[in-house]
Amino acid sequence: MANNHPFRIGVLGSGKGSNFAAIASAVAAGTLPAEIAIVLSDVADAGILALARERGLPAQFIAPGKFRTKLEEDAERAFVNALNAAQVDLVVLAGFMRVLKGDFLRAFEGRIVNIHPSLLPSFPGLASWKQALDYGVKVTGCTVHFVDAGVDSGAIIGQQTVPVLDHDTAETLHQRIHAAEHELYPRCVAALARREILVQGRRVIRKLP
Image (cartoon, rainbow, N blue to C red; front, side, top):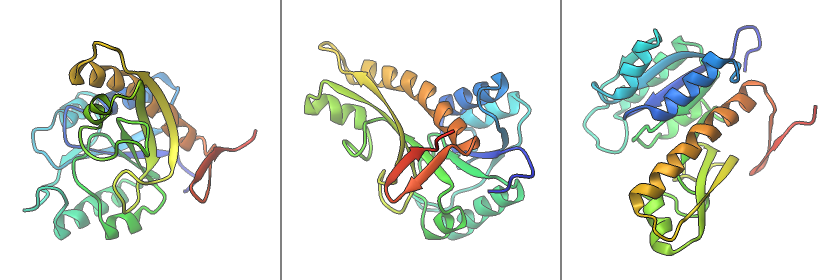
């Protein structure tokens, strides 16, 4: 990562953009020492693009191609080119509903992060809050992790717990996990921006001052 300019973040999202909004608010408040260089979406009318434009940030739709769960080769190249042109130091996935494949992962190796609504490695994949509720665990939460070629399998950067209450529904539990995500994600991205993170195999640790 280059040190001769402010730490630059590229955000990818497919939906409303609530985690992006939490990160943008942390940047504006000065608690996240970075700038958002570009926001990209595979959905033309995604809320995340509207939120970015309201904040005066570069926001762009890139057509994903014919596949439902991954990017077509040309689309993948367009995403990579846009992120490179914006000179991003870190790619932040904020509700991006496409699986990233080899060329994208190689282009930003060790520089892509995601947030998942469970305490990984428990309950990877879709609707993990419902998985946790159905399983009967008493504590779940959210995890910020590096992205690799697996499904929610990258090295864990940070986690935050959320209790499962006796009368929770999938919806109420999901809402509280969302609230925890909005606290955890900016903190973890800030640690990366400050270059406080050291990766040793699968272990991610904070550097000593």
